[in-house]
Image 1 (tube, rainbow, N blue to C red):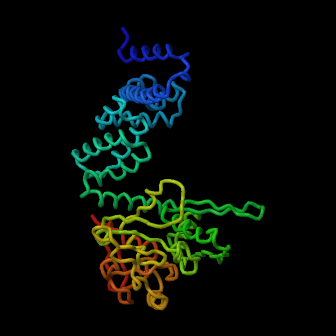
Image 2: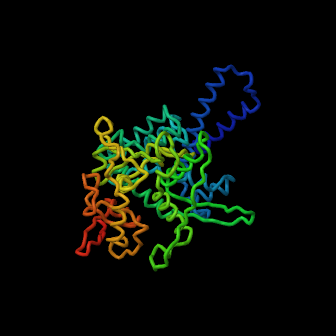
Image 3: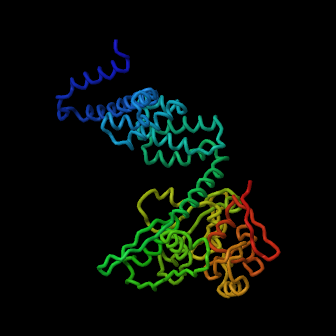
Length: 427
């Protein structure tokens, strides 16, 4: 007698053979709609069965000497290795951890695309989420599959803690955003290549927020209601001072320089855009602005195709750093989301103050850093977000790297007798 799973596969093949010559053209509208829904449900059940077998196929790997079950599946079934590897990951998850997700697939209530999204969302839960929270998140997301497709489910999965454990959500989202921003900063790069036909190809990779600013600035020039405006050339040069920055690969240095250039653009010299100077609005609650672990939302910016929701969230630390700079208006919100403070005229250092700081500090005032003062940003040691004043006594020049450190909750800072800041990672 064949194994029940093999017998089921043989039976399915026979049943499908029976309808292989049936023309669906003559089905009624209701029959076609019912058949499509039912076939998707059955397909999900069949995928769950295949994943269940894959999860138990270590002996197949051992007997054939394959690298893993994904490699064996790709070779034996002539499918893409990437698809087989994704299936192996999902098979392992529903076999070892996600029993409710497995049940949803088995019943046909969850389709494979939804299952992969739910598993990714559950894998992304913070490490300190306890078993009850993880179980509730799984149950909630599996329940959402009845009403939402993959795109909506991706957004819900990213925010599931806000639904089931709001007391954990802010800190978890802040940690996630801080990690993404740090990784994006390390990945920033830009390259220029002459084509030999009078044009130069520009290609690169920059953080989402910098791309949002660039698109917003460029749209101020491409607005069809305005005549074309020629922007002045900007050239980024580097002084050979043996700084670690100069030891980075050249595309990385160009990428960092491009991001710094975007943050230094004088928005008041750009065309009026959306009825005002070309600025970005960043909304943040008063509690989040003051909290170490929090997040904020970029309200305005140029349109860029892709996952806009993921790109338009930034960490509270980044919001506090940007609040020190021009081109950004922090909109501080109270309890019922009413604006409490739309920027603050005196939150930015004046041109005269910047000159005085340049004369006083000369370079970045972080310990061991010699980035020239002309490349630095003015920082409020007593934070603007906590009522710190914008005067020379509460001002310090920091390079972009150390300005991020100053607003990074993972680091503490101490001002030494010489006025320089030293940074230490918190335990």
